[in-house]
Length: 496
Image 1 (tube, one colour):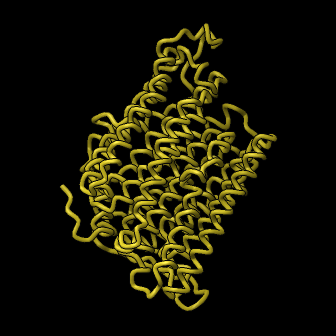
Image 2 (image 1 turned 180 degrees about the horizontal axis):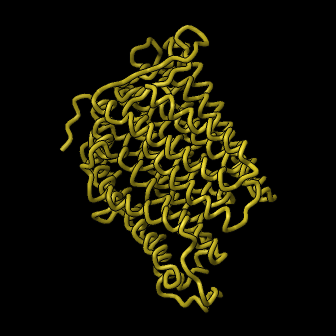
Image 3 (image 1 turned 90 degrees about the horizontal axis):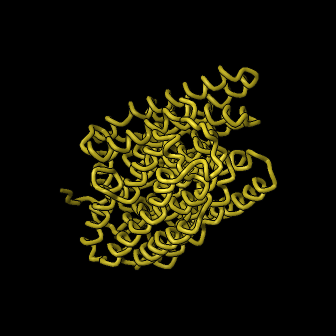
């Protein structure tokens, strides 16, 4: 439990040190990196104990009877925390190269807000009840705002307003759901199988709680039509975009949805009240519509943004199937998407720093000038499409098997069409990069790889993605944690 609490506190302490070192860039950035490493090591040290069946909770203070600020580690939380904290290390290293390469202003504010946001993310992951999760969720919302408006241009400020409008609105929906949960259950503590299943709440009240919480968390999860803030937020620096999409923010929304499905409402009540249909419907619509919109985007980061909107809903779709295979696919998709998508955003940032290009149509021949960078993008795209030997294939395989087990054949159709669309909007980027003439696109005659502080994280993220695809049996790895969580949330589930 000490490690779990320390992991949450470390980023907040790091943020204070970053402020104190604001006049000394090198020590400030060193503290940022050291803090991220310490945080991950604390999380990693807690994984074996949790997978061995050990769970612990710690109440810091109480507001009302059975309404405590409570921290606790379980399989689902440690999966999210481990992935996020590891990727924070790479994002921090990448940020050094990116922020210096573009000579960005307000770097102390940037690193400080990044640390606070990461602390809030770990607080979300390791909250033992909905009340604590909500507090950290709102801290995350506020701390990310300065990152979104970092450039302080009219476009950035407009994107920030949209971000706050949607995310604070989502927070109000969660707060209303929280009040109802406490009113009918007398507690907000998470319980595998759903706390509301043990209450005397009427079906109509449970339905209201479900839709309030799904809508609230669905804002950050970018479930359509609650998604417009995310593409607009691409005005932020590229490391922030990666943080939003792969490391923390949107994953925090999906994590909240998973808590609702498995720990608040519960699978049995979702089935009995006919709520599964709505989850599958909105997730499927988001997957397909997001992919179609991505096809039309020429801006590199906006195409990646709509891809994220689409692929995040794979996680919700798999969880909504309520089968062991579907849940496994959903949980593994958290890791598969995180490493591949962060690679892609890192690539977009590296290209911008070295060439100034932000449009896909401007990338002709860039693969000949930045071969390592674009090779990493190619491998990440193969994972997103779901080709064998890559982690995306494993998650889509399990999702399809889960859909078959649930007799939801329409879901298999959605996954197939989505994979075709993935190829349709990723492969042209690769073709343009490796086949075009860089001189005709106006690129400099001499373009080389970005600074090693940017290239190294790109190579590490894509190597990790490959390892996830080839070594699923990695001890205490994402796949093993996903198995552990699946058996916990679906007792009696049978996995191959």
